[in-house]
Amino acid sequence: MKFNILTLFPEMIESYCGFSILKRARENNIIEINVINPRDFTHDKHKKVDDTPYGGGAGMVLKVEPYVEAFESLKMKGKSLVVMLTPQGEKFNEKLVNELSEYDELTLLCGHYEGFDERIRNIIKPREISLGDFVLTGGELAALCLIDSVSRKIEGTLGKLESAHTDSFANGLLEFPQYTKPREFRGYKVPEVLLNGNHKEIENFRREESLKRTKLRRPDLLQN
Image (cartoon, rainbow, N blue to C red; front, top):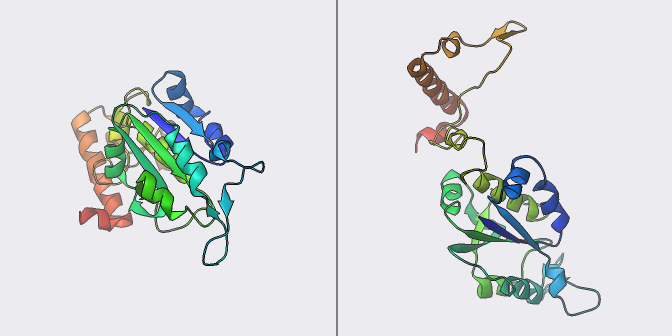
C-alpha cells in the first residue's frame, strides 16, 4: 500500500515511520510513504500557506491553492482514496481500519490552524475522518495513527498477521490479558490454564476473559 501525506511538517511523518514495524514494512516494500509539502506549491517568496479568514475571526485558514495543486501533482493508481483528517469527520474505528486496508493507495490531508479553506473540500472531495471528539494541533498525529493501524492489516507488516486478529476490537471485544515469563512475580502468578498446553481450554479461557474485560471497561461494545 502507498500512503501519500500532504503535510506542512514532513519531518513528523518521516520520523515516526522510520522506526519499528513501520520501518521494516517500508524496507520490505510492503508499504510506501510519500510525503508532499504544500509549501512547495506556493507562488510567493515567503511560501505562504495560510491567511486570515474572510468575515473575521481568530486564527489562520489554510489556503486553497497550495493544497489543491499539491494534490493534483499526484498520479494515483489502483484503488485509491483521499482522506481529510478533521474533527468534523466520521469516527475512526476498527471497521473503518479494515475497510481502508483494502485500498492500494491512500492520500491523507493534514490540517492546521483554524482548518482548511472550504474550497479544498469542494474540489478534492475527500472522505473526512476523525480520531474522536477532541481537537489536535495538527492532522499529522491523526494521519500517523491511521497509517499505523491500517498497515497492521497488510500481510507482511506484522511477524504474524494473526496478531492483528486478536487485537482489541478485532472481534468486537477488548483483548484478553497477556502474560510472559517469569511465571510468578511478587505473588502474581500466570493462570495455570495457560501453562497446560490444552489449546481448547486456553481458547475458552481467553474468550471468557475478553468478555469479562469488555463488560467491565466497555459495556457499550457488548450492546453491538
